Image 1 (cartoon, rainbow, N blue to C red):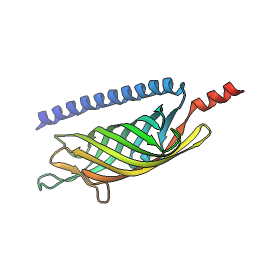
Image 2: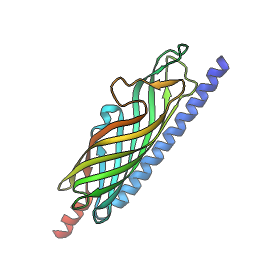
Image 3: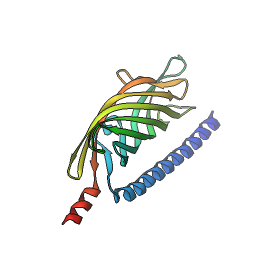
Length: 215
């Protein structure tokens, strides 16, 4: 049992290092891509205002690619406390820490001007995280999710500042560390179709670049 515990702790520590390295690499890549794209015309760097409520911290970038069409990418870092339970009587419920990331590529179709006004969006959802606990033992400690989101939203531009509100649904297939699954009394359900929405704050540096050129 002691050997199994040491092996689990070593594997958990190694997995955490990998998660941190992947998260750092994704953040750096997004920041580098964002700084390059933001220097060009019609690009918006965004921060999620609503995700921190659920223990997610998002950073994203949207760029115009054609008339009425844009592409976006968002990465959310997960860090929150969750409750794991099991239908098997041998496994007691556990309070654990969930840390990882969710990557969401997105395509948007606007009714009018790109990056402003009403839009419809289709996103992919790819997530991975690890559970850690100080009070129990988890043999399988990883979580993953694959799915897609369909949203309607409205993006309001106020000079160089952008407010992006959206709502819709997300379908996801979540894989939990059997025999455990996350206890979600209200929402979202452990897996399947769920409501999703939020609010983002964006910055458009190209606006200041055009103002400076006009001056």
